[in-house]
Amino acid sequence: MEPKQAVAALGALAHEHRLAAYRLLVEAGPEGLPAGVIAERLGTPSSTLTFHLQQLLQAGLVTQRRAGRQLLYAMAPASMNALVAYLTENCCGGEAACAPACGPAAQATRLRKTSAA
Image: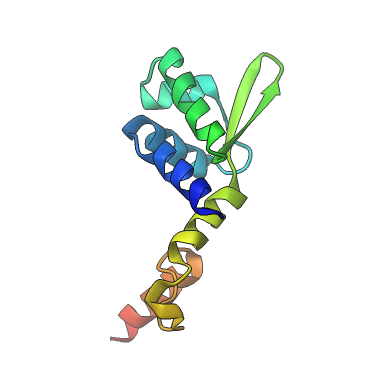
């Protein structure tokens, strides 16, 4: 990911409603959700949500597809992974001891360490 792309993605996420919508889409997975469902779950008016989803779409963080009369939005896993990779590229000077703190494997490792103690 190029710095300009990272700035655009971070800028798109730097708003309470957009961050909430993005987190909801991440939770929903690659199938995504209809715009109306997102608006309902977040308690956001549809017109306001459309503006925020367009910002996420322009930043490349979500995709949009039509299913009949509905617009479905989904998180773009490659973009999310690229942003996280960009942010953590030089974490701890590249030492192996600085492994990512998220994901199922990291959580299982933490649980084993806690249980052993």
